[in-house]
Image 1 (cartoon, rainbow, N blue to C red):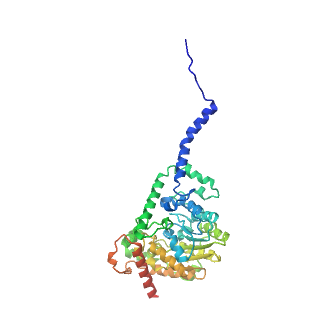
Image 2: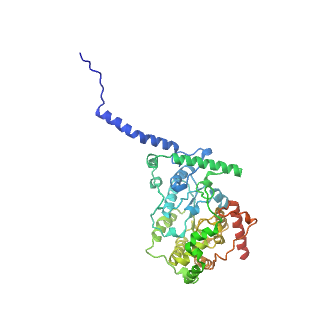
Image 3: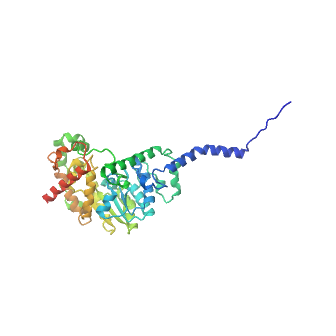
Amino acid sequence: MSTNAPTSSLSPTAFATWVILLLALPTVTIFYLNLSADPFQLVFKDDPDELAFLSRNGQDRYQNPGVVINYQPSSIVVGHSLAANFQPSRLEKTLGWQRVYNLSMQGSTIYEHRRVVDYALERAPVERVFWLFFPPNLGLPPKVNATDMVFPEYLYDWQRLNDLRFFATLPTNLAPFVAQKAEARRFLEERALVSGRVEQARDYATNWQLTRSNRFNAPNAVAEDVMGDLAKKPREFMELLRAGPEHLTPKDFASSMVSPTSSFHPNVESNLRGIVAANPQVQFLFVPMPPLSLLHWQTMRATDIESYLEQLSYVRSFVEIMSPYGNVEIYGFGLSPLAEDLRLYRDYGHYHMAVNEAMLDAMASGGARLHIDNIDQHLSSFDRRVLNYRLRSYQPVDIENSERLVKGELSLVDGREIVSAIERRSAARH
């Protein structure tokens, strides 16, 4: 006698459906977990008590769309690391702007800046744009990204739905970012305990001086970083400097031209002039010449005169192109006396946050303004300062109890004191 056990079978269609569901389950799970975490606020806005922003190692490129969508700034700061330490609350206090957010990105190009500005103008009621870069950026091709940072183009297009790709594709595991965000919250809580006030997360969103360990007040190390082997060969360095052209006059700069084949022209047209012309209701404040250390410029003049002249011609041509627009203001800090003091620098051009504050103060008072009528004289005066600077004979301005300063460290309070002392000495000389 035989007994047939009951059997069941799946149809080919049902079997295929189960296979697809099982294969999709890991992706769906990852998507759900990532969307729930959403550390960059691409979809969900942070609870006010849990607010923090991420910006390290290219994270800023993922963070900025969430800032624009969720916080609707009316004023933005764009640029690279030289713009990162402008605190939004300081801009509001000094320049009288409203709802400022810093959207600068580490190592970014003007093309990437323009993508951020385009997105912000489309998605938020932006009225003012503070845009900082330095002269070499102007000579880059019109569409180029930072070589060591991924720029997620799909987050900056006009479609919101495809932003969800971020949660289903790389990075598939957002746990490290969640942990870093928790660390950022703890940092803000610690700052609040020290300052005795509630700290604004937006003031620390891109800031690298207050949120990380940075070297300042180490002038000898900075000099070696800028000059290389020439730092130990002052006589050879001076011979190279003297071998270059004599002081450049305003007429020299007036007759200087950027090569017609230079990437400067399509770069400025595509990423700068075009967006200014298309948005006459928006005020653009440009800083194409931040206060890089004077030693950096002098070393370039001595060792690479062609690059030196080219970069200054970029600045002049940019001012000439932009000056006719009534919604543009341009500022240059090549003549800033702060650029002499290497204590305020961590390398060739990354300056102390007290310098950021001094720049805003100068803008508020109408100083450092560049336009077509003064750019040639400005660059000529700058070239004279570059030629006359002498690192070996330069004596930093003393501040009260300066012996307390520790090599490699410079607090914001001490940085402000050095800046004030330099400005007082400069005013006295003039």
